[in-house]
Amino acid sequence: MSAQMFSIIYTGQQAPELKDLARSRAVMALPLAGRYRAIDFMLSNLVNSGITNAGIVTQHNYHSLMDHVGSGKEWDLSRKQDGLFVLPPFVTNQNPGMYRGTLDALGGVMSYIRRSSQEYVLIIDDTAVYNTAFRKMMEYHLEQKADITVLYQQERPHEAVLSEGVTRVYLYTSEEGRVWDIEVNAASPKTRLVSLGAYILGKALLMRIIEECVARDRHDFIRDVLIRRMNDLRIFAFGHKGVAVRIDTVQNYYAANMAFLDADARTDLLSKGGPVYTKVKDEVPARYGENGRVANSLIADGCVIEGNVENSVLFRGVRVAEGALVKDSIVMQNGDVREGASINHAILDKSVVVQRDRVLSGTGDFPVIIRKHGIV
Image (cartoon, rainbow, N blue to C red; front, side, top):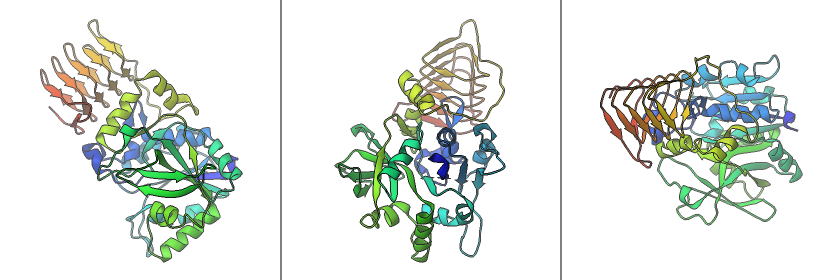
């Protein structure tokens, strides 16, 4: 059934709450779990579901994302028919090149939608990361004879976030799963069903929706389609039963990486719906010095560990010198923590150097962030 479906992944979300982490990269290009990017999980979900036609709609800071996905070879999406298509914004009389919402972005790629031969489309418009096969969601969509099916997860009470730059869509459903009400960023929601921003609908319906909304100057898929047309469209909700992590704030990005240190969550995120593929980079294995100590951490290839690492995620090529301590932290590619330095609850972007005997200390709720190529 998934062969009847193509996918559009919208990666143009603004992320002011990510601060320096998203200053020079799209949110879906953020590094995760020592060797992955967020986009890897979405592309792997598609290919594990049998979907071989995928378009990535970009807008802001997408060069790093384009470099990572390339032709889609690592996900078996480099094909003569269908495959992976990167769809950056371009200026026409109808498209100013800046999208005011998801519907603008979809309108900007109408030529791609028209030429796709599949009958159904899966739209992904969120920064959540999870591992699932969309086959069951597609089967549910057909069984319910739904017009639109929304993927959701059960949110735990402490996960509610009302930050200005974050969007949460709460779904109210009947016993049969039909959505009868939707709230966006509700202060006191009476439901814990939260959309994961993945929608299945027919290609013909999507094209009608885009044309109608463009004609009426409407831009937001949630407010101008799901909420406005709730009574005349059959909208159903399908639950994701596994782990899903958000990466839309600094705190959530930090927590998402820390989640991979838990064995159960790591198994769920990396293999439950199928393996997660990523761009292959050949590196020598990690090397541990005589006095190097590591506990409950993810250490990527190419690292040199001569100091102490605890409860941390280290990406490729990180060096931790003798006498240095990295604890409860994330150190991205080519980070250099020198002799006697101490890092606690910190996020070091690529190629950060922490000089000798420096101390960086944050908390789980407010980790210290050092931007790319920074020297402390």
